[in-house]
Length: 139
Length: 381
Image 1 (cartoon, rainbow over the protein chains, first blue to last red):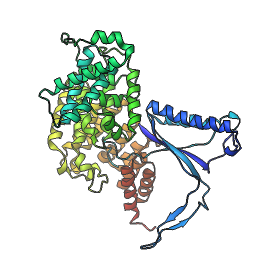
Image 2: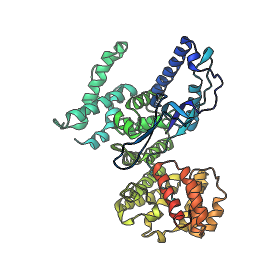
Image 3: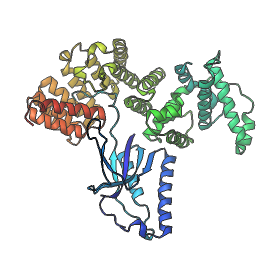
């Protein structure tokens, strides 16, 4: 089993095929999209592959340590970054092929005109927490 | 409260229910409920006959469920009277349970989860914690697995090899949460090896014991990885090593070699060396050759390159490595090690950094990053 993070970007990902911003969709199209996402998560819960899913607010800020006894410095909202994460889903699957298959399904969520968005999703494997018990020689 | 006893009794209780006519999925649920109740009740009110208690409670849970399910009315009538357990079955029920839970129709993750619950007697919550997924997800994975094997007859002969594969996966997962999966895998493999006449079952048990014996020495107090060469061999569990070697020798004497026996033989040669310098690398290379014949696995050829490097020098190791697919995980780590032994520290440092970038787990990544840093410390930035 391996865990993967599916990252959805507000911006920073390559342009999707069906590139109409959500605020230009019809209310029905938005409902259909939300329904698709909910159904997707529910299906993964049933297959025993769902770990977590969260959405993030688009607005955030940068924070930095500024030395002993001084409050942290803030510099927001993301003035310089091009890449903004919209949310994520964590899955626990048997193979990378399965992770790719699921990412493909999620990317097919309907957008404007009820057609798939073909949105680019970032797929990142988790690093294991501990090494396998069977040791390898000569690290 | 003896949780180990509970786990040991689980498969026997489950098979009693199945033999009385309960279907596997319902019986398994009922046993799980009985286990949860035992955990609650036993500390204050320990039973005199633990297994009898579990059978009674599980059977009652099963009947309650059958009653609640009106669609099963007729079947309930059939099982209402507690039947006497039939004549001793020709097959070993616990063994059948292993086969069912590792059935080839299951995905590896499903087989692992079902085995840990139905044979291992772990709760869904414990399994979920061990694999770092939500309890609801693990519950779904298990009930889906049970639906998958619903049509499989309980008395069908199974394949020991698939069972061994599942136990190997459990062992390799190691330790997280409050369940020690490696120890659990050892226990389940020991129980299996006692039931089947199969040298590979003994081979896998020996392999697990020989690796498990080194566990205390594998991790530094700060949690970082200690390689085999650098381990304090005084911290190895010599009793466990002795047991592993005895089991392995008996298996090898049967002259039906398999990959687990060969892997165990390599582990035994490491365990036999009082110091790393006394390791019999020539024999280890021979075992890797055996293993390569048995499995034709690129990972085996990768590990063989390390052994060749020790037996015949780093140049020979690099020559062996040149024949291994460079896209393999850990290829860069092995290359780095051999280049360092060959005195090419700049290349080694670069390869260690590359290997860290490609590591599959945190402990290994940190270890490889330290190796790169150690070599770079002597060179201008």
